[in-house]
Every structure is written in C-alpha cells, then in structure tokens.
Image (cartoon, rainbow, N blue to C red; front, side, top):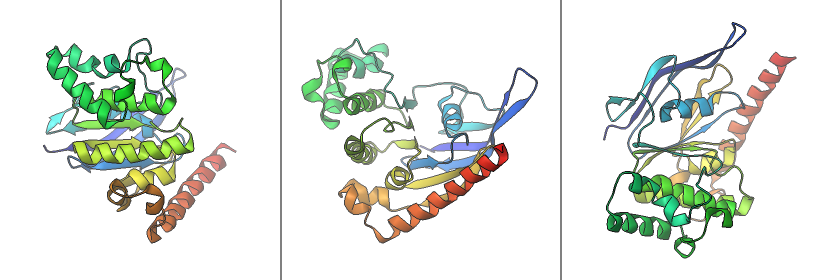
Length: 265
C-alpha cells in the first residue's frame, strides 16, 4: 500500500457576518503505511479540523487527501475513527458493538464471531463481552471503541484525544495498548493529543502545529514508540532524550500560547 498523503491542505470557514476563519494553511504530510503520527499544538491550531478532513467529514478549501493513490471525497471504511468519548451504542452489549461493522457488511456470523473474539481477547475484554456498554468504566469503553474500529479492518486509524478523559493510571495502560495494537496490526495511526508526554510516547513521528492558521511548525522522528512496545512506559520516560524533547516542545507550545494571548489583548 502506498500510504496516506495530505497534499497542501487549507481550510477556510466562512462566517455569517461575512468574515472568515483560516483554520489551516498549506498543510502537507506523507505517511507510509504502518506509521504512527502524533499531532500536538496549542488550542485552536486546527488539529481536529485536519483529522476531520482526513476522515472525510470535511472537504478542504484547497488541497487533497490521497490514500493508497486514491483521492478521498468523503468518509469511507478504509479510515476508522476513535473519538474522545467512545461514541458507542450504549444499549448494546460489548460484543454487538464490536460486531456492528462486520454485521453491516453482511459478513457470515462465524467469521464475524472469530474476528470479534480475537479483538476482545486482544483488548482484554473477553470476560465482558455480554455486558452492556453503560456498565463499563471509561477505560473499558475506549477499549471497546478501539476493538470496534479494528473490526472494520481500516487502513488508517484516526484518534481524536482518545485517552484525554481517562485517569492517569488507566491512561498509561491504554497508551501501552495503543502501541501493542499498532505493532500487531501494522495500521497507520494519526493521534491527536494535548499531552506532550503522550505525543512523545506514542508518536513514531511527531508534528507540532502552529496557531491559526494551522500549519506544520516542526516535525520530529522519535525512538520512544518503538521502545515502548516491549518496555514499561515509565522506563521509556527515563530515556536521556525524553526529558529534553519534552521541555523543548513544552516551551515551543507555551511560546505559541503566549503569542495567541497577546493577539487577543
């Protein structure tokens, strides 16, 4: 597979009063199949807008999204989305949530059951498969959301602050699960987060976006995601380069936030 190309994408929102907001300007990125990209930036820099364009929920004002040599014109099964809140069917069981995509495709029940059982084993929810979603904790619900996304076998998984609402301990466990799934499935993943530490831990590549109009400010290639696949994430954070990169990026984003506040005064 050729991967994902974000080709010179700009997004301008027209306002009712005749004004406009330039949310993104000339954003270009190339992701090889199987890469894990984390995206950071100050609030309002267009991170989620960019993710929604890749998902096909928004059409860019300029530029194109190209996946496996085909231009994206709207949502499609080759791109799966995991939201901050799971967006699950709360009245359904865990099993029914995960099997929803295969069922909609008309997949034979035996094949669907095998996929669902494998994924529930992978995310550690086999013992909860008959529970209703509303009976689960937040962390468990996000595991269901990941399994449901994977059940559709997308080429690209788009994650919009998927761990942001979790407590610190659960979040760390889920970070480890994301790395495990990335390596086991070989999926291309784009992860939006406000946590510099999380972006460093999970991003094989990390992009820092500048404030409005959103654009690529700096890009990093990092070793921490590969290290974290088979290691305790707390040990990875002790890596000599981890703290220095964290402070560098934190300072960068703080400077951007100060710039934004200065504009508003």
